[in-house]
Length: 220
Length: 394
Image (tube, rainbow over all chains, first blue to last red; front, side, top):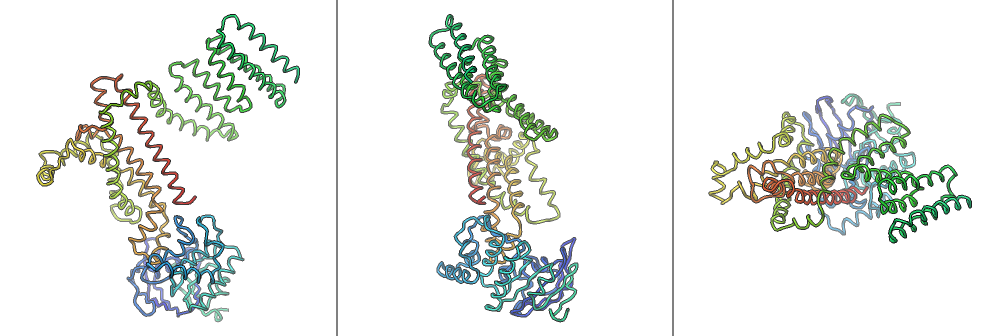
């Protein structure tokens, strides 16, 4: 569960101001806004990349406002996959587990579990992440996030540069994860139709403000 | 085809008969082989080329004969060039370089290597002009750049050919070996120290914006602006004997900066620091902060993020900076003359010999130094390229 009260942050030429939001556990929340509306910055602020000037962030009713990002257990999938180019596909996926000093056996087991969900067989053996296709890259990025078992996943237009096939399989994976693990997912897009098919509720951002939050049925 | 063969054979038989009278037997038999080879290639080309180009092939023979044999009286070079000409005729570009080679040997006998380089570059520019389908502006840019590069290249290359291998070998005495060890040892240690302190500075400068950033930025470039001797004097006044800091070090640690390895290292750090730090800054700037963000959300603290993500990704660029910094430290002389003339590094040793014995004695040592520096630069660059490929898996 995420609860945000009166979140403000100023970057000099752009600011987020007065964002209030509550997202329940297991909910699929869509965040809609045009380019430059501040969607990515809002998510990054909640994830702890930036600290807010004002306001508070509660995650599972704990105050996380000033906690560093590594303590928040939020998975972040960006528009670009940002796979670490100096690591192989497998090393990318178990990056978070290695940092947590998990045992080798446990890491192997986790990769097997992810393999069942994401069907990673074709890419797992590859060394060079640069040669994967766009869809494969995004899948690996998602696997890397899922490996650490986050309670919350932020997806910042991850399907932006994928074709419709890869997009559909990405959606399918997300809804499977949500069903199986009751994960809270915040999905950002500038395509309202895309969000309508996915989300339980949609928030609309304009110039750094969250102007409206709608149940998906009540809007149309 | 047959007619062409007859023409060739007839002409060359005549030439051979005519020459028999005054060439010695060895040269003449070589010439005969070259001519036979020329005929053989001529027959091959007769099948492939049209009449016009084939007659150019023939005309080329006479031109070479006239220039090299008749005018400049060099039968051996004529034979060598004839072999090359016959085998390279189907590659017109390389043939152009061959003609430039001949031209520079005949015209600029003393400076033929420099001439060869200049005219080859010129020829290359013209070829580029043709390849780019006559884009005058880009070719002009290329030409301007090459003028600048040749200003660097010509004196150095000319210098390299000023001494024989034997003289070079005989200069390698104990003194110069000591100087080599001192130079490479101190430059390595200085680079290591700059790496340890410069990389954190580079990371900070690349990631954080603050009020006095332009000032710090200028400070990093300062050692390039300060004249080397001024830097030496500044260091001497700061650390030298009979200064408070120098006294302190001398009394409590028994360390002297002036005239010691430590002095050399201090000077080298002072002058070569900007190269590594600049490279580190741009290397870290080229690593997208999103990588670090992703890493943070995956659970790394700032220190782990630096060592697991930022540093490995920036390392190729930083290593490039290390090469520059190392080579700069190796070639430092101005401040060393002030702070630590002994133990002498190579630049100081060269200067020493030049002052004591003059140009003639210092040239072979300079060449030696140049070769060693260029060689280490090339080797390091090579390591850099392979490392870069293995790190970024491109």
